[in-house]
Image (cartoon, rainbow, N blue to C red; front, side):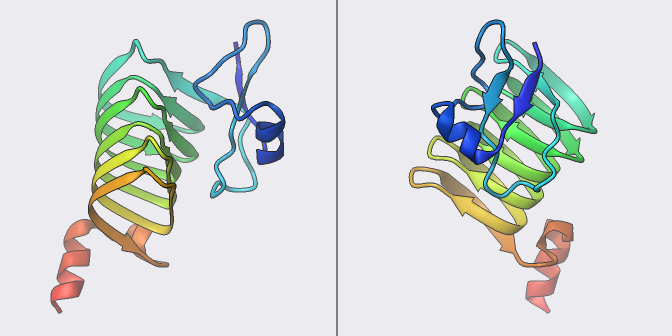
Amino acid sequence: METQVADSQTEHAAGGRSIFSTMPQEPAVTHAPVLASSEVEDEVTYLSSETYFEGKLTANRNLGIDGEFRGEIHGSGDVFVGRNARIEADIRARTVIVEGSVKGVVEAEAVEIHATGRISGTIQSKVLKVETGGTIRGEVMMGDDAASTSPASGAARLAA
């Protein structure tokens, strides 16, 4: 079954199903993150809730994780962290959407934390959206150069 990313109008028409819900015999309709690029890719690589992965993952398309992950994630598209996901990793992607739990450095053009989402660590992003109920425990660096600044260089810049 192929998972497709739909625009926000389709999401509302589909009853707000997320990337982690599927319907038999038809592609799953997913929410398009408000902050995502207008050129949303059609295909999503998906790690289900029964999956445990440890290591470095590089994705050249959108990535959905609803399982447990430890290591590093580098994506050229969007990374969707599902409600069941437990991630201990540094994430670099175009957009990171969090409905589950992330511990580590999140570096993206845009970060979106939904009501069930939690990030513990450092967020580096040009744009940050946090829904009521979403939590951040750590450091947030924002601005045009935030997504390309490492935590060490950001701390050095503040000390200067």
